[in-house]
Image 1 (spheres, rainbow, N blue to C red):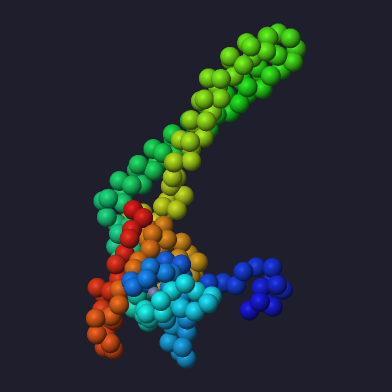
Image 2 (cartoon, rainbow, N blue to C red; image 1 turned 45 degrees about the vertical axis):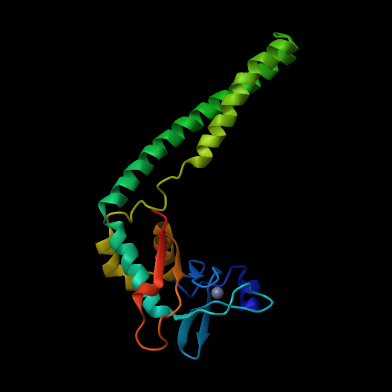
Length: 208
Ligand SMILES: [Zn+2]
């Protein structure tokens, strides 16, 4: 795998839908993908390279199917439409703030050249800068708090349609859809060993 990565200069493609999104219900560590013979699994790893407890193992396919189904269902809920509407308003606010930021930065430059050309004194320059600096700081802070619609456009309200195409989509696309909606899911220990997968073991924490 390392040789292949070096040769192509690209990372190896992911092969598990929920890599990085599952946590151990016993110790809270990230679960790692691991295949045993032909069975794909997510496991909590203990040992020197990993901080886990080694106490959780779950078969991958049922967890992936249940989470995908829940994500696609969630995309068509009214709450998700509201979220998208809110994010679109944020997008508009985002461009307003950027314009203001550009204007303020242009003014800072103008002040500096006025001072350089002796049109204003140093105290005048300082006094004029202060409110601008304040506003620029505040705009920066506001910009960093705005989350845009990028991850949601094209998927909110399209859950049913995406469900029919789900199997044909590549893993990157599927993973992008899941992580737009799901922050992570905790996998609880099995109540009894063996038997059918118990859906109650999955405790999702939704992004939105
Ligand atoms: Zn663990």
